[in-house]
Image 1: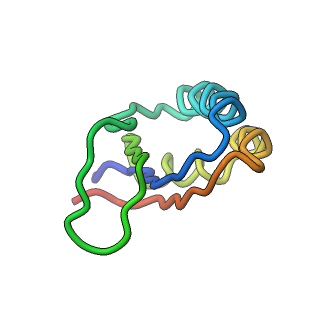
Image 2: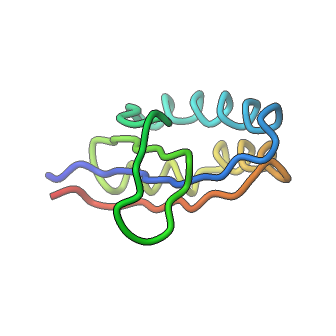
Length: 95
């Protein structure tokens, strides 16, 4: 069965608020069996619009990645992020 991933691209405008969100989201990630593969670090835009902060979280399957992203626990984390920046998040199935 293919693994599942949550992929995010973010622009942080309030690092203090974002840190509270990131801490809560990390707790929730563990509940749903997620493992961070990418969290920030160096990046280079090859094409299109890039964002300074990128994340990839690996899950055992697509259903688990989706469950994390739409969970009530993650919804609580999202509230902590309000006004702290912009983020695009997708759940995808691996190859």
